[in-house]
Length: 97
Image 1: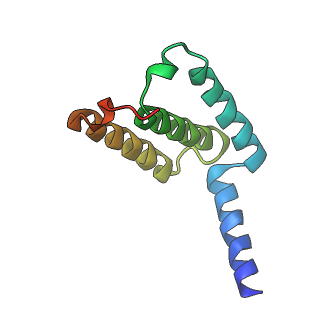
Image 2: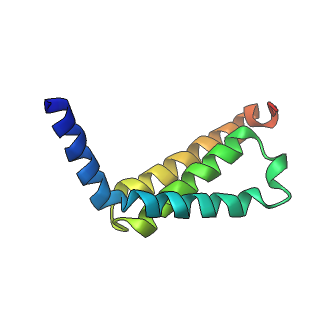
C-alpha cells in the first residue's frame, strides 16, 4: 500500500505543477494537430517532430498548470538544445521514414 500512497502523492504534486490531466491532454493534442496539419510537417525528421511535440506538451503544462514552475522552461530549453545538436551534427539530415 505504501507504493499506492507514493503514486497518489506524485499525482497530487503533478496536478499542482502540470494542471488538470484532461485539460493538459486536450490542449497538447490541439497544439500538436495544428503543427501536424502544416504541409511542411511531413518533410521534418523524427528529431524535429519529437522536439516540437514535446515542446508543445511543455507549453500546455505552462498554460494548464503552474506557469512559474521553472522545470517546464528548462525542459523546453532541453528539447530545443537536443534538436540543435542533431542539426549541427548532420545526423538529423538522414531521415528514417
